[in-house]
Image (cartoon, rainbow, N blue to C red; front, side):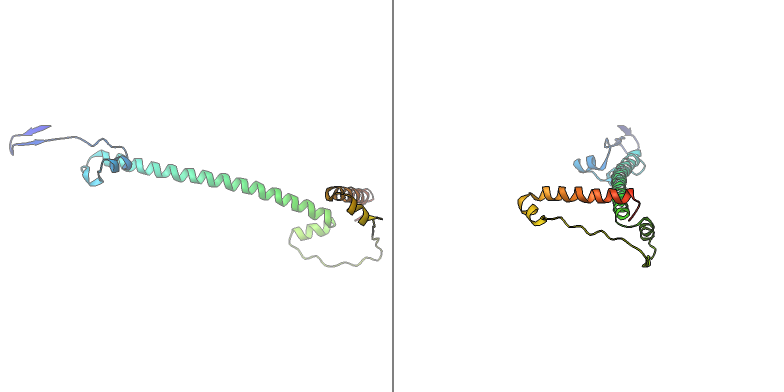
Length: 154
């Protein structure tokens, strides 16, 4: 507090003690209540900017983490798709399809086709649980796949 003799006034010099806009709102203060050249204005503005930057950085980090997880999941699914493709088709055909190339039909002069029948399959199904039937079929076709790999046929 200072006394000015000339106009006979008391002048109160000081700065508001607020750190952010939330505190100003609680105290029913506005930026216009702070003197124009008071450094408190700058501090509040910088504080608000840092708060906004922190929020944006936090959201960016969350989005980056989510993107990374999605990229890993996509790569896993791509690997599963490739494995399935290579199991179902000859390697040359699978590579062409994977690269988006056109695969023309081919003609072979000699081929062998395996047809299989499980004798009593209907009776087996009616007397077994679905899980047991699936396990049996999986075992049979796994053996077929192993034999085709051993003999390098497709």
